[in-house]
Length: 66
Image 1 (tube, rainbow, N blue to C red):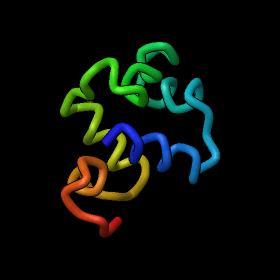
Image 2 (image 1 turned 45 degrees about the vertical axis):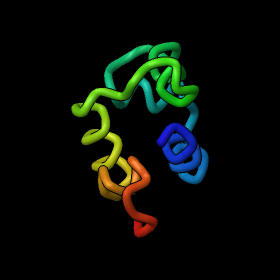
Image 3 (image 1 turned 120 degrees about the vertical axis):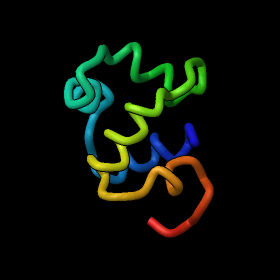
Image 4 (image 1 turned 90 degrees about the vertical axis):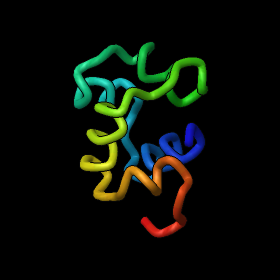
């Protein structure tokens, strides 16, 4: 999952800082999601899926279909 959220962000060519702002959090806090240091809360997973136009299942690695 952590690799997927990083790849989605990089594919969209957006910085961690900009994405963190969209999510209403700090860049440091978001960075810890990408490294796996912190678990991603369900509410953030849903926001990420909506932002990227994909499913939570894709982000979680349950499917390879975006």
